[in-house]
Length: 439
Ligand code: PFF
Image 1 (cartoon, rainbow, N blue to C red):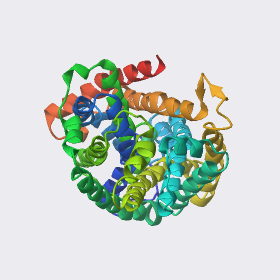
Image 2: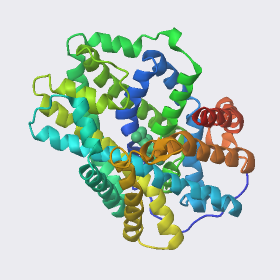
Image 3: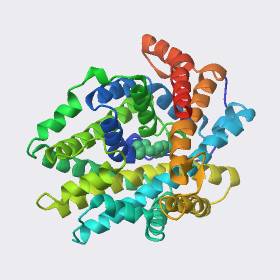
Image 4: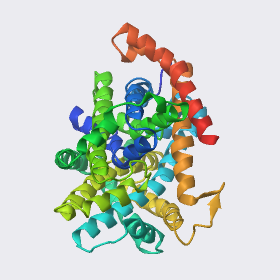
C-alpha cells in the first residue's frame, strides 16, 4: 500500500462512543424516516425491504468502511485527504464539499417543512384537506424560505460550536431522544386496529414485484441513508483517535441505521393501512397522509408533535454532518475559524436553498433539464454526485492506493471479498446506479 502524508493538530472525538453516535446521527435522517418508507411504498413493500437489507449489509459495507478508513488514515478534510494520496486527486476531493453544499440546499428545505409541522401541531387548527394544505404551504413565497433559513441556521450554529461542544453533544442528546420517540410511536402504531395489514405489507414479500429498477432504488436508498459519497463520514473518520476495530464500528452504524429505517416503517405502515390510506403516495406520505391520520386519532396533536420532533432530531443530526464536511475543508484549507467558515456556508447555502424553496411556487417555471430547481438538486446529488464520488474513492483506494482488505479486516476470507468488492463489485453497482439515474 502507498504511504500518505499525515496532518498534525486537529480535533478528535472524546471517545469511540462519541464517534459511533455521531456517525449514526449522520446516517439516521430524513432518509430513514421520510424517504425510506415512501421509496419502500413505491417499490412493493416487503420485497424491497429484503433486497435493501441484503444490499446494505454487503455491498454498502465496503464504501462505508473505505470512507471512514481514508479519513482515519489521512487525518484530513476531504480535499486534503485526496491530495495527500496524490496531489492530482485534489480536484476529485473538491467534488465532496460541493456535493455537501448542493445536498444541503434541498435537505434543509425539508427541514423547514418539519419546523412548520411542529408549529402547526402546537396550534390546534383543523385542516380539512391536508393535500391542499401542504401544496399551499410549499407554494407560498415567504414562509417556507424563512423556515429553510431557520433550519439551516440551527445546523450551522451547532457545527460552528465545534466537534465536541457542538456536534458531539447534539448527537449525544438528540439520538437517544429520537430512539425513545420512535419506540413510543411504534407502540402506538402496532396497537391500532388492523395494524397487522401494515406489518404484512412490510414483512411478507411478493416476489413478483422483484425487478431491476427496484434493486437500483434499494441501492440508491442505501447509499443515501448511510451518508456515503460526500465526505461527511470521511471527515468524521478523520477525527478518530483510536479505533482498532473499524469493522465493528461500521457494522454498528449499518445495523443501527437499518433498525431505525425498519422501525420507521413499522411506525408508518400499520397506521397507513389501519386508516385505509395508500402506502405508495410518495414524498407526501409523511406530510399529507400521516397528518390526515393524526387528525383522526385521539390525542392526534400530541402524536403529530412527537412525530415531527422525531423527524426534526433526525434531520438536525444529519444536517450538521452535511455542513461539517465543507466546514472542515474551509477551516483547514483557508486557515479560517469555524465561525467564519460556517458564516460563509450559511450565506452560500441560503443563496442556493432560497431559489430551490421557491421552485414549488413562484419559480416553478424555472427548470434545469426539464426539472424544477429542487428536483434537479435532489436528482443531481442523490443519483449522480453521491455515487460518482463514491466510485472515485473506491477506485482510488482499490486501484491506486491498493488498500488491502487484510489491513482492515482480520478474517482472510472477508478481507478477500472486501478486495474484490472494492475493485469490481461496488464500482459496477455504482456505474449501474448512475446509468439508471441518467436514463
Ligand atoms: N443519511 C442522511 C439521511 O438518511 O437522511 C442523509 C445524508 C447525510 C446524506 C449526510 C449524505 C450525507 F453526507
